[in-house]
Image 1 (cartoon, helix red, strand yellow):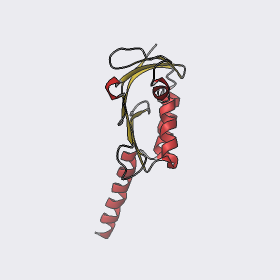
Image 2 (cartoon, rainbow, N blue to C red):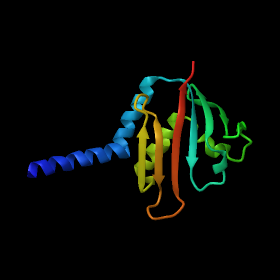
Image 3 (cartoon, rainbow, N blue to C red):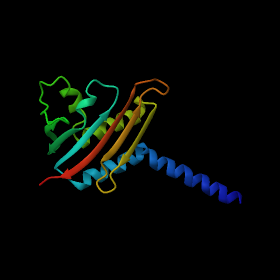
Image 4 (cartoon, helix red, strand yellow):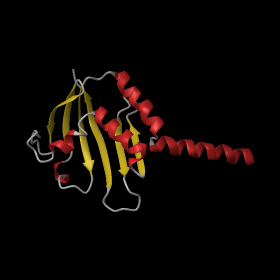
Length: 151
């Protein structure tokens, strides 16, 4: 009976670690993304935070050879470099940049970081960052959906 409870504890810990997407999981998922060699893709990015641009979400982003080539807000407005939020949006505008954000925050910049990854391609489908445990309005969530590989 004692062995059964020990085994159950190990299973629970393993499931909890997998669900939170720890740093080693992020590295293996990033490797999966890189091995897929997808050079042209489109996706929707919803940045969930207490930010003035919430009504513009989700963003529709197209990426070619690791560079963002187009970005539109939820109303179909093209976001250019002259947009007040361009620099903020641009830092999350590719899968590689999202992996970099995840890695930086997992490295100690946040109190809590969780992620969920696409089962086939390995890119993050959700990232949750709580920079300061117990502080209000500092949480940041990214939801990636509508991924489409383009020719």
